[in-house]
Amino acid sequence: MRPAQPLALALLLGLLGLLAQVTGAYEENAQAVRDLGVTKGEPIETGFVFWENRFIEGPYVVERRGLDILVNGTCVRRGPQYPPYEYAVEKDPGEPPPGSSPIGDSPESDPRDNYWSRKWRYLLGRFGHTEAQKQILVLCRRSPDCLAIYPDPGGRPNMFVFETKSAEKEKVKFHGGRARMKLDSNLVGTNCEDRRFAVENDLNMGRLLLWWPGLEVSLDPRTAMVLMGVLVSDRPQDQKLAELRSANFFTTQDRDLPRIVAAFQPTDAIRKKVDQARVSLEAKRPSSTSPTTLPNWEKRIVNGMDDSADLQSAHNLADRRDGAAPARPYRYYIGIAALAGGVLGLVWALLRVRRKASP
Image (cartoon, rainbow, N blue to C red):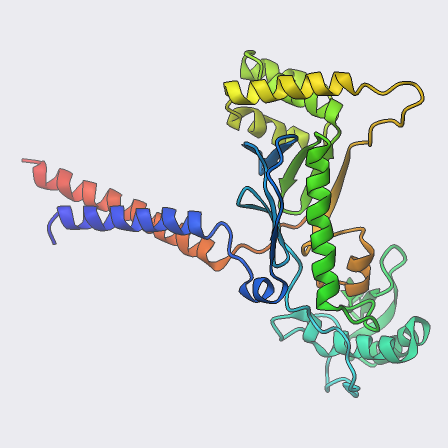
């Protein structure tokens, strides 16, 4: 193989990796889009949006594609699993398999499908929480390695503490705390459409919205002016960061503010928008009898739903890993692999060229 051939191959792999990264950044749920459709609002000139510390310039078009929320084509919030997981268990799973234990007993890829979680949901759906808890504890105590099991004092109703005969303690979770309630697909779609309207409303109010996987922050217009005013200024980055750190914007600011400041590129258009927003805000300054500005807030997003939402409790969507980022699409990993292969191929090709050129 000529030196130019591996070089061309390396460049090709690198380009494929970059393409997969770009195209794989958002992979829509085709069935959700087909069943629940797409809605898109009118362009909004007010407000400010950041996604993973990167500023998105307006005007803003908020779109719902299936269950996902997008702003200017960037998916800022993934919807919940679709089609919805069927938590209800109508048929009794029966007695535990011989030698089965609620700890380390999840051969299935989805822990919601193991015997103990299915049995818990069956009992819960048929008898209610109190009786279901009594019966599941009786079954757990039959496990060969069980010394004791009892409800987790600080956990949710489907959390238990399992003590083994070797004096080890492990927390056990039976997936599906509200198995009696079936989730309607249209209900999830309606909830996500309401979420789209809420985003539009926040932007129309002039709020500043920041999204990361698993976290959403909304700053009121006056706080937004503090943040944006510093960002569009001509001060050095270290001075901007020092000024912003003195304020309490959101819980992850120690980690994310340096990235926001480093990535932000002020333009004349952004400065003009900030000035216009400041003038508009001053004109709307509330009197002593006017209602106060809505407060800043942030919320955790788990499996596409608000961690505190009633719908989240009703559906009990899979593992509630507080603040966990959603799973990356498979093309993300393909892109990483292709990009790494391209870099290695490029290094190898350059070494071969250098070796050929050596006397």
